[in-house]
Image (cartoon, rainbow over all chains, first blue to last red; front, side, top):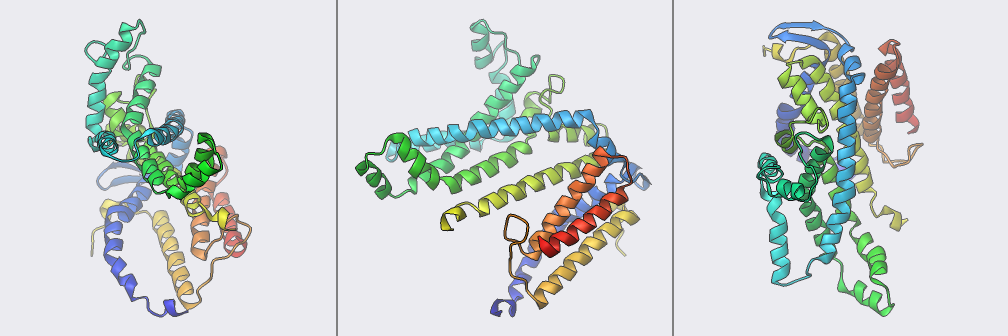
Length: 290
Length: 93
């Protein structure tokens, strides 16, 4: 009971609470207010109840964007996590080679997101881009501005190139933290490389990999700048993800009511998955203790 | 008086936020007076009353969205279901 008697430390949280209130809670409240009204301009608005929610929930373009988003985030996790672990396993353990690898791997993470899009526009151009010209040179038609599949391949390649290094760095840190005694024991028992990975390295990396999955899911779910610059959501709506669709609605068409309703649904999806991942993260390793 | 016109307040949204605010204040006061230890109910995880409130509110939001998306009945039914669900969750969750 002692810890409930002195709660003065909570006052230290007040500045954070005020900042969060101004930067997040008050805007969120405004979005909730907008979502139930038709906004024509300052002071000109009509209450419409749940009409926008109904409209947005039955909107075919939203379903398409949501499908694109889940497919994209799913593919991101399926490719980046195993690839990141594989690269981390193959990296040198120490010496200048390890340092060099780490620096090279960190480079894509340092480039601003909109610049990444521009780099890949040039890289994949069929007339002057290294990748575009090389693929067309093989006799394959490749144009990310015209073919949906090519656009998807390009966005995925860009995403994998940009963010796999983060998974590598996390997995590498996890691997380096495993005491050498585990590997000695494995060698004495005559464990194969696969058995060492399956029963020592993978369980020991569970914590960092959960963080990697969390970060990559959240980031990929909120992705905007790179595909916006690279494909603009096209061709057609092939690479229109949720955030691109939302910005088109709110800024492009100035449909503030539907955009607000859409934002709230987007927020609820992110909140649900954040909570699920948080629970998973909290329960990592608790199975061993029972 | 601060001008809140830019926030485009309406009576239903104001009622919604006031209700949430009252629930949070009441829960905080209740926990300060009589702290509840985390426990395990029918949910597959150990929860505090705060956790159960969060789960209840989040799931209620999805109940409302599902109601709007899949039925043409009045939204008040969804509110009724949510309130019952919230009470069940707080008591036995």
